[in-house]
Every structure is written in C-alpha cells, then in structure tokens.
Length: 492
Image 1 (tube, helix red, strand yellow):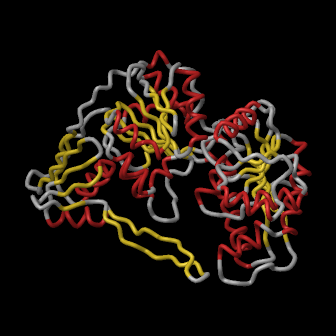
Image 2: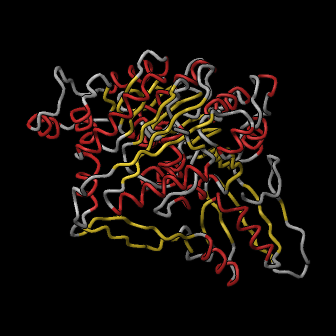
Image 3: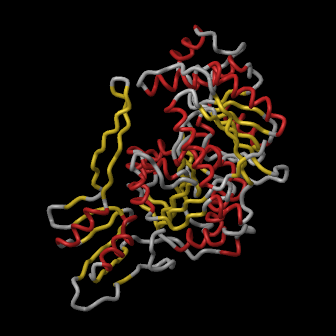
C-alpha cells in the first residue's frame, strides 16, 4: 500500500532533510498537481507518471496486443510540470528517497465540517479502520473484498458528514439504482442523474456516462465517491471525473487494481495509491464474508473450433457448444435446490443457446439490452422463448429487487449483474462464461460471498475445458486464482 505521511486531514508541509539539499515545490489543487522541476525531478516524474496501455484487438482472426506508451503529465512552456493529485505522496516519497527536500502544499479549499462520529451505525470488525482512512484522507483508494460492506461504509460517510454534498458515481444503471436504494434507506432523499432521471440533491448518484451532465449542473462537490473504481479507468469516465472540483475523492472496488490493459494508473491518478487492501482471506477471518467453495467440472469431447480467431473460438467453444451447455445445465439442476442460483455468461447469444440446449426456460434471463437487429437474428434462429419481451430498465430493476428479496430464485445473467449488486441470499454461482483475469475472477465469484443467516457457505461451479488447449489454459488460470484468493475446494 502507498506510504502516506499522515492520516490526518491536513497538508503534509515540508519534509525534514538536509538544508543544503535541493528543494522541490509541489502544490495540489483539486485533482491536479503542479511541480517546479529540475532534471532529477523530471526524470522521476517521467518514470512514475506513465503507463503502457495494452490494446487487445482481433486482427485477421488472431488476437493482437499492441502496447502504447501513455504519459500522465504535461510539461508546460512556463517550465512547470502538471500531473494528477493522486500521485502527490508517491512522488513526495520518491523525491525524499533521492535526498531532496519537498514542500508540498494544498491549495484546495475545503468546505467539509468536522465529522460527527456520534451518527455512526454499529460497525463490523475491520470497518472502523477503513472508515478512518475514508475520513482522514483527501484521496483514498480502497480495495476490499466483495461482501465487506463498502456500500455500507459509503452510507456511514454520508452520516458522518451529514451537511456535505456527496456525489456517488457507478458504472451502470443497475449499480446506480442499487446504490440509490441503499443510500435512501440511510439518509432519506437521494438525487439521481441517469438517462431521463435528472434530480440533484445533497446526496446524488449518477452513472459514469452521466457524470458530464452532473458537472455542467454542479462542478463542485464536497465528496466524490467512485464505486467500482476500476471501471473509471476508461477514457470517457476518467475525463468526466477528473474535471470535478471536490474536497475529498474516494475510490472503492473489490478489484481496484489489476486491469490487464494497464489503465489502473488512471485509478491511482484520481484516488492515490492503495490506502486499504482487505483481501478475501482477511475478510473471512474477520467474519465479514461467507466461505466460498469451488468445484471444477470436466468438459471433454471434440474441439468444435480449431482456428485462430478468439471471437469464433468463444462462439463455438462456449456460446453455441451444445455438449458444454448441457453439462452447465446439468450442474444448474444439481445445485438449484441448495439455494438462489445465478449462471453467468458473457453474451446474450450464449444465454439463449444455454436456455435452448439445457432446457432452462424456467430461469429468468437478465441482460442489459438487445438491438432490434439482434432480436430479428435470434427470432430467425428460433432462440427466443415463447412470449418473449425485450428487457427494459424498469423491468430489470424490478427483477433486481425480486432477486435481492429472495422472491426470484434462478437466473441466467450476462455481466450486467457482475458488479455492485447486493445479493445476500445468493448461494450458487455457475460460471459458464469462460473468461479469466483478476477483475472478472474477483467480481463474479464475489457476488455470493455476502453473509446471510441462511448461508453456511456459497458454491462456485466452474468448468475445466479440456477439449480445447486455449480454453483449458483459461480454466487453469481461474483455478489458480480461486486457490490464491482463499476459496476452498468443494468435496465430492
């Protein structure tokens, strides 16, 4: 985690060093950092404030990875360096390690009053330490396992600063509606900016896509909270969020760092280095999350695709693989009596083929949207169930509420329910998606880790795809990740 000079809500002041050492003057204001450079200073900034962006593209049927060097600073003609405030303390530590004196000042005006700790609800083990960081730091990046109460802590932050203006941003509309419901139960009226919803309040929620609209209406907020902050690293979200003026910026996610494309540097630029890293193992030992037990089911048979195109490989090895889909469906039928069940797939194409091949028409289908062109294609393929009606945001919101309450028991979902939803009663996750990576392997299984009185442990079913070498390697990567995370193998 990032070395921080103090957990107090103050400027750091000058570092203690040899009086003859060169002095580096740094000043933060809002989300930016100004530095008076020397040759040595520029070299350190040029080394730290950049990243290699990995662009994954399918070119002529093959996966092509192209690295692009991206600078996170600008050298202005007047001879000063401008970068992002999230780098301030990391750079300060590096300058001091090189024997330089550092004068770091903060020109950001703060309108935040003193925190009122008497307003807090009862905190669970580990949460007081996280809340202390959220209160004490101007920039705070929290990586905490799913189920540890990150949304609860956002609610407590709103109670501690009851008179503050707080903007909570999240990637998608389902995430935002879930946050709105949780916050409304604690602080009362909550504004929402998303699509047709345009209401500002002292506490407001918005999607990343709607952040620009919020900025036009109100550029200053006392506190900005970025939920699922790893997804704020995309260009449009980052550009919208960085221009806000705020006294405090907080980023939260179970997978704050670990993006495969290298853009996690943008997360650090916004929120600083990791202030909290609460792993699943630590959370389980504290009693914050349920045990997750995993089991891999072998999928053998003939390889349905031997070409090089990864998109085609996914289509024929996962989405439209009748043999594999039947095995997935068999596992769903085996475990659905244990409790509330989600089958995760990557695409709607896969979801519909799975329903058809596995005869899972009693499962509710959850997805973000379907174009009219896609609907006609699926109709020609006779994949749409009888009485099918396209998904609407209103209907998906109602399905989310039904799943949260336990009224809805069985769903096949794309990744639209893969983050920021609160399914405490969820007991079984079946991963038919075939994806891998630190973010997806953290987020999807984490949906089942929330504690509930009726849950002894959660079940995670995955598949060992031995029929194809590339798919098999992905299976092995997922299995290694589960073991490293602290999930336990399921016997039998």
